Image (cartoon, rainbow, N blue to C red; front, side, top):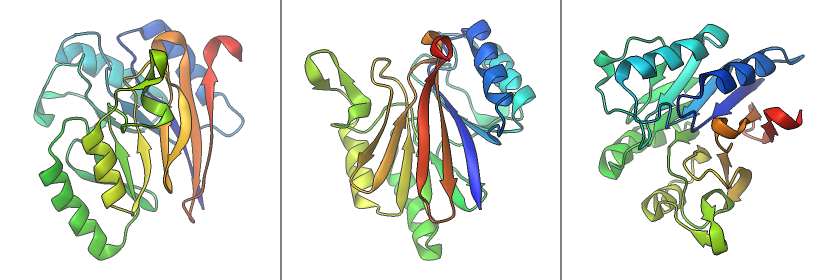
Length: 215
């Protein structure tokens, strides 16, 4: 069994570029069945702006999960009018693994959720806006690392986290490793970037970073 996932981040309300990416991904010979969005869906937009973008993604992929980023409006789940699922501090299921959102930093709450999952031995994907510190996913100029130290510690402490999906750092698109955990930063939709990964039932991950303008 395998699940194929489209990964987006940092859309920043660039709707035309987003539509072109969605069209390209949907028309692959074997298109993804799920989509994860790692925040910055708008560019300091409104909840209505977020709804419109998320509903556009939902038109192409029915299984859409997201977290908010620093350029998005804060809202309670009931304020969104979209079928896309905000996974912040919640447990959701994708086929044979669980997903938890780590868009804002409430590690005690997330640790409680992870402790529940440990009892069932479920593998976990973290969907986050900011990447973990000191990986290829959080590098900026002069090889500086500006990711979350807290998130890195969280991943290192919880070995059943097998995948971290992040964004935020526009110039560090990568699929890399943090110990045994795969870390994906697809790069920003604003420059045509996206990633597609395939996860099998043994939690092995194959994936690639794409750029719309280089396909």
